[in-house]
Length: 120
Image 1 (cartoon, rainbow, N blue to C red):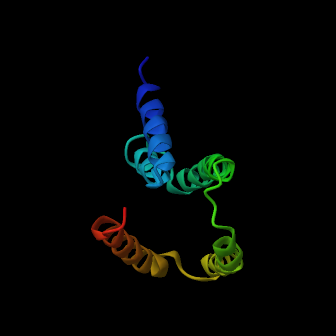
Image 2 (cartoon, helix red, strand yellow):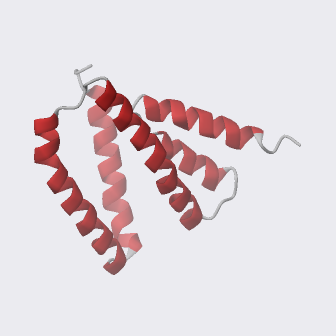
């Protein structure tokens, strides 16, 4: 009867964290795989689908309040698109086990940089 409580709480908390720019999808992924017994591939797919509306809402909000730095976007967007295409190709030809450790290290480094950054 209360099986909906954990998914609802995880979705709400993920939405709040996403609004703050923290990456609520990671929390959602962990809850799905560790507590809701969702298969990892399905959980990753749901996480990607979750990202689309939250990113669109964030972009809409930032555009509405003129918070986008358009020259920076014009400079970075082509590199981001190229990196996404290269990453998608790499993920189809590389062994997933080879990608786990570098990705984990990347997450740890970026987390530490974010945590210890003096910028607010």
